[in-house]
Length: 115
Image: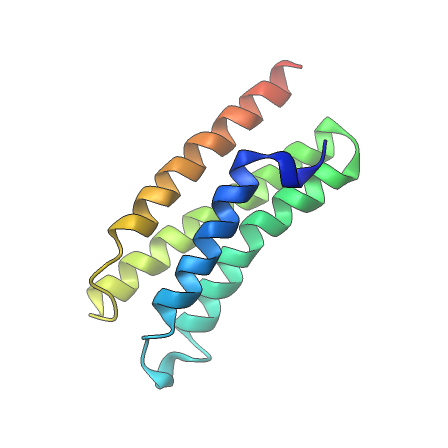
């Protein structure tokens, strides 16, 4: 399975781009803190989907999909923190994307477990 054909991978790539744009507005004092942490967690989502898909076994793919799910939870948490700190006011779209990606990952995990 080529990861570039997976809708969840495509959606997570789009979300990474949104997060990079959003975090550009964070205070410069956060460059090594929340900005860096949020970007790393976001990049980890499509990266783990890609790595898992490339491994060749459903068991390994499931492992990496679960890591992607964990990174997704990190992104959600960090966006909430950024909002509470007043760094963002337009986080709704990213949080909607998080929900969508979570559902897509859950569906793919469920499918692979049944296979």
